[in-house]
Length: 276
Image 1 (cartoon, one colour):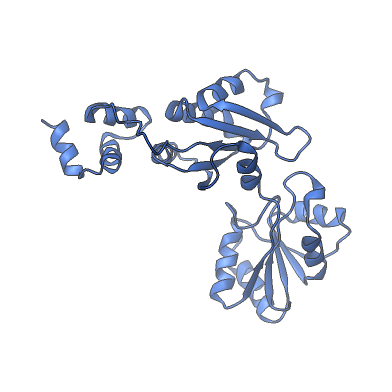
Image 2 (cartoon, helix red, strand yellow):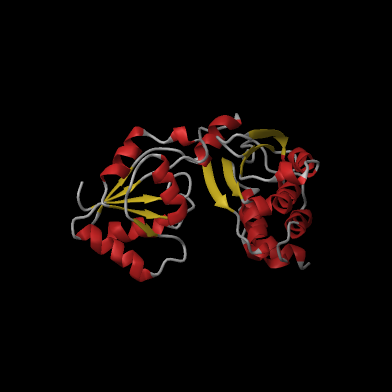
């Protein structure tokens, strides 16, 4: 339809995973907004599709986004694609979707490949309720705070892990989650697809034993949530509970705040106990 932004998922590895509807949409739109025009151009060429491409990524200027919106408002249709998977999921495309929605432009999302959904469906972990965390923060302090928050998450959760971050992040996750069940998914839908299953600590050990060549790849990690019937801190004293979070890298003040949230007790009460 004219004046529409289409969100078009592309394969995360296997080129056969594109849908017929996705190909039809890419063939019918006036232009394509791609995370990387080189990657997007190659993908379109493989399907025999020729369309003008506009770069849209996390460093795209506001003027480029405004230009895309103006073209759509003038009656053109645009397909938004990322390098792989579903646009706007842990992806800067979400900003364009929001801007189009606020401008009154019709946004039409197509179903298709998404690494998070592939991973949770193959994990064997509880999937009635789960949450997507995407990439952990690069900043070490922020990452430790996020991991500390996730130790209290009761739902199964999904993480994306960049190849160059995998070894260090796995150690941090093993320190936090230890015996929790998890699945580490490598190179989903690609030739060297592989699943590592076990506890987070086990997977950390397995990963360290791999050769540098075997470690290369894109990773999705699925970790079970905190069991409903138990709390990891149930047998801990307040002081031990605080030390648990400090060991994960939180400051004493942030550790007290975390303990307060866990126990449903005011921060003032926690401070009184540790300052006796």
